[in-house]
View 1 (spheres, rainbow, N blue to C red):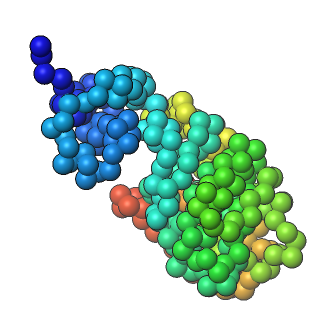
View 2 (view 1 turned 45 degrees about the vertical axis):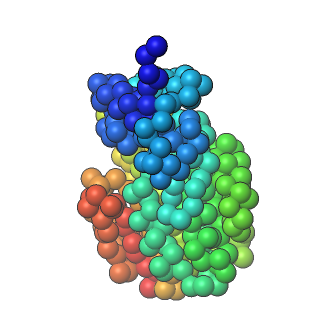
Length: 284
Ligand SMILES: C[S@@+](CC[C@H](N)C(=O)[O-])C[C@H]1O[C@@H](n2cnc3c(N)ncnc32)[C@H](O)[C@@H]1O
């Protein structure tokens, strides 16, 4: 009787399938899918890789590998995404949080007083708001989204993590309590920032799985960031910060628009890959 495939052999076979399908990081994805079906830690995968792969795990791994070769996002297959120090639940129909947005959240944490107020329009899964609330537990954190599915997931993530985030359904700052006008220390957002025509150029994981309304702002891509820049003067306290994630191709122009709106200390910061990504600006 032939020996059963070991875990390591199965990971290598899945990695080869993913590579042939053009998946960008095939070995990492294959290892994470194997960990998921086995419910093992990273250490267990390393130490027990020579063991035979159980049949039920092999069948499940085969199914997930097929979905990944069809370019379903890894995080949706795993059901979770790590973001700074938290693990978030992710679901189809809600934008999957990205590592580059960890820079945006970190800038918010660095600028938020211990008992300050942070508002995050366009929260999606609640990634930024939950990370900020976890790292600055004494702050008041308010998050909004126009998508009921996103609001539901952000509330669920905040509840699971045990962090205090007020999640409200509605357009940008419209659902935020009026008493916070002029009292916000950090207005932070990763809004839709692509132009209509850019949608077709995206990787299949993004184009076919993230909601269009999470990606595309309108004909120029500046439509939502312009609205947030225009609102910043009314909602920020004097000295408070506006922090916006945007496309690398649009960051310098977004910074110029913030300066033209009268905001000060305008700068563009790079993401984890060195690309222009985050625009910071201050109400003078
Ligand atoms: C790029 S996703 C970012 C999600 C999350 N902040 C993150 O970084 O993972 C943009 C989010 O903005 C939401 N959105 C789009 N237009 C909005 C608006 N006018 N007001 C509030 N939320 C909006 C979308 O539903 C989506 O969840």
